[in-house]
Length: 484
Image (cartoon, rainbow, N blue to C red; front, side, top):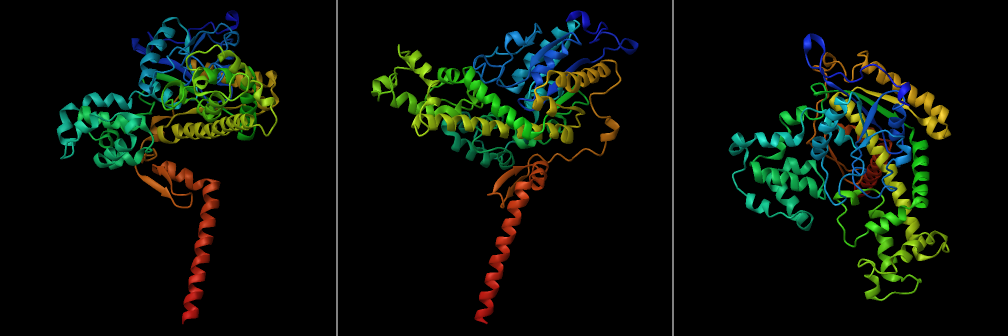
């Protein structure tokens, strides 16, 4: 493999014009889940001396290798992978943590004269690395002005006593009182963000909305002033093909041990907003496992309360229970456990399809809001046909050509700054819009609102609402006419 790779210096960082230090070149492979990002990155190693940095928020955690679809060791083909299954599953690994771990890795890879390749669908991780300005960075710079930003009343002691999800409603109400603009920007159930905003005010006396609407919001996410020179490649697959593929992949995961993994991580009353338990495919099994562990023993008979908790304490029947999971899909169709299990699997498929659409929308926003120049590669035919020849010709080859041009200075990773001066989209991130036609759905920011308005589902519901209102108006007019 090494003999066929590029021989030229791929990642110069100590030279350049007039001895100026050049930016470290980094390739970023993006795209929705199931599109083949990891496969492409490994295949690129036959063309360039690369090292891969995982940028998937769930794959950074150890455990659930099948569920999170980590690249198996034999499929890594000797290519070094970093931040893959290295974080404790109970730890909250934030975008700032990712950036702080990734920047030194990029420097190490560059020092070995190799090309760093970030691979993943977690866009806010990638933003944190490639953008010069992270939201958290500005918090430490607000001490001198905090007295001017604080409200007249001081609820900081109350804020510091906020305990997260156990006091979620109180925390959101407190944030609404302190900073309505910030509260409108987040969902009332987003415990992590509520706590982040309240902690910011408690430490720095600064309103989150005032801070994030200033210099931070203007710069975060932009790459034109980045310390890195980035080439963004996004694998694109048509939704009908990708939907079928991920559904088949879920079925393959079930066959490959997904149920065993979920059984091992299951914990009654667990917090599904932190660590590895956030992954799609964990929470969906809660109802099923609750019934399975409380209502049946290893031989299928009704268990006692003592037996129902024995699994948590590591009972001798634990392995038998786990093995019996695989047989439930062969039970009669009307069997309660089979119904619950199939419903859980269907929910995983549904939530994964929804994730695909969110990921695609977010990639589009990186272009629209932050001016990223992203090279799209269509892998629809390759995924649909499952042809290695098609994959090599239609995905790997164009990707390698893009990277080669990028390394040779023939392609730029961001749009020309002159083209964006005075033309950038106004980033209204804080205004809250409510769509009556769609069940009072809350949209945040003008960009999100405009995207929603253009959606087919919204247009259909809006048309239905208008017709209903017109009918009501007509009936009222007829009633008035009768009275006259």
